[in-house]
Length: 252
Image (cartoon, helix red, strand yellow):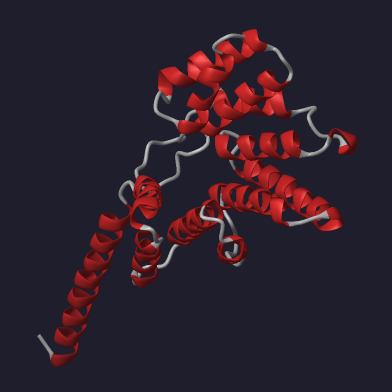
């Protein structure tokens, strides 16, 4: 074997070994990543800080392999940091982290359906910090990105949920509230994931149940609200958002 061939073989072997190492690092971190982020969010209130969420973000940043799914979870983690600060009354930090999350996803080129759905969700959440024309413009962005997500994957329940939420919170005077029920029922008819995968998002269905119960409750249609609540509890018995309606509907 001549020297050049030997050098090439060594280079290929090192490259393959490095790729395996990077893949192993990625595998270890991304398995059940959604649950890891949520558990770190819950821990933040016991710990009195968001360090565990920040550490997940740093670990994702440290991965040698870069991909859209890694960027997705970085943005998702930043959203939960924002939520932590909002719930601990640090509005300035909450806004900063949310804007950072939106920017992280907005900079992704050729966004897939999941990235577009999460971006729309984050933009929808940001509307509470806006007012007047800015809120209306953001609501239009939410609708546009959710619809783009559905063009890429019509079975993406998270995109249907975001569309429903956007319609639900749009004032009636501006045409809101007309399609919410339809969108939520569509979301609930779909699987959490098209193909089961521990790397990929599965959030949205519990949120859709909760919003639909709220929709019927506020319309005083308690029969439908109780029916949907019963279905929700069968799948998400410990979900806080869903359980808050148990007491509300008890005497209805």
